[in-house]
Length: 430
Image (cartoon, one colour):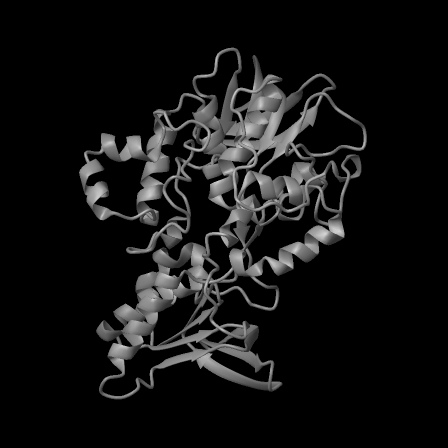
């Protein structure tokens, strides 16, 4: 079946990135858009909506404020509408609970006319003048074809689990942690694997609840230390439009080198989380060190296998080059995520310019670069670190990306993007 509407832009996926784009496009005259997502409604990382876990960017990096502080879809308007503005004022913090951010974004998604859930995009093809987007509506199973001058791919990421780890109901990725939390806490032993914020938040929550249970709690990380996320104000300026422009202009090899150097601002644990963990450990140690708590860096988890209802975890202390094995009931993997690139993009692999085997070329306006130039564009908001830097997956720069896309689709500057907005410069003045 076909839909005859021709949209200026069709968005695929309604995560925070495309949701912000939909919000900024909602009231624009003469630009039509629709956004499809296969889920029943907006729900951002539900498996990690742990109580007392905070968003790692200030609330001002909401869906719209950097482009339009007067927007009805700002976070401040949300708390105002919830009769929570005075509570938020007295809260006196820039960081907000992750659960509240999820509720805020869901509130926006329910207000937008251009967001349609239960709608799975199954294919995208070009007819020369436009894109044909086939959408399966999951409630009715009907398939419709929609037309668009431009596409924006916001399919996000999926949990990364190394191939050496056997699938098991007893091995849980952090993306599914809350669903499995009760079973994990009812076990006799738990291992958390990873070094970032998610690993720390899960470890802290299990550490807090350990007093009500009997499990042994272990934390392994391959990192040499449990490092703090770089939060210095000057260091944070890499999350700015100025740095993104500079980074994109570097050759591919230089960009990859820069990403390694920027690891301290991309990965690590918030200072407050590390303080809470240490303070709790200290209080637990007043009457003697707890033998049921093991924290060990420098440790690679190489394989995990299930044998007779127990997990065999094979590890290596890489600095000493010593291998060892532990047997546990449950493992929580904080092994991160990888970009979700739809199959219909891989099907067009020979038509696309690539910078590496899995990294397609993206221009400065977030457009996928084709071997043959097109007038109808496919904008990308996933798999962008190699092209636009460490800010590509950070909520604070999502609005700038959306401003760029809207301006390009409109052919004029609707949302001006600030320049020279930070104190640093990354090249000498000409």
